Image 1: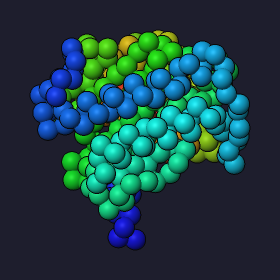
Image 2: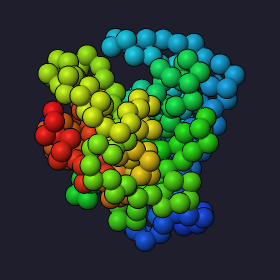
Image 3: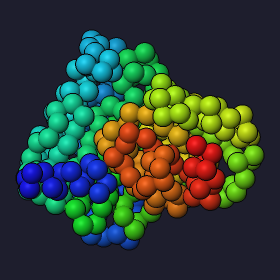
Length: 281
């Protein structure tokens, strides 16, 4: 049990960095540089596979898709990461726990978030990389979406950035004026909130359904005001985007209002509207 304390804390929520990368949180500068390097490495695996359709689709026990591109990207990332940080731990979607489980430093990785879209030729997918410290919480995140030509990153206390521009959430203060993204699935019906979410989409100024990582990145950029994820999301789906949203000035919680990237629910907003969204559930 003791061996898993740092890991469970990480996933359960209990220096030339290039133009536009904030160095105000200098303590995390080297880790951000490494995370950006890892994102480049994954892009070199995933983008050619996506563009040339060089993969076979398999299905996990939960019926979610996985490809050799998912596995190879995580394998290469893990190899490079643990060579650079041999005292750190890693929790990835495809290969589980590797490295040092006792370390206070734990990386949380999804090599391809949005594999379902990836397999169908939809460019809304990304590599998600986050670093969590047992005492300091989430410290670094990178979201790389090469098929969209987009990349986001954040450091604790250093702000959130999109392609070299600093992100800030919107100032919209009325749901009637809000851009809302809702990803409905059976889980929301089982929780008894499906009708409330449908009503929210009808009340808002506009409703969209881009899903996965992108909805939360859009909240961080101020392009979307509220994003409600599908029920069943996991820490590797949420850790990187949580830090982005929070560093951009927004709120990120589960449906109970608890700040968390543990899943199985996730709601991000500009902060102003957060309590009103929760009240509607």
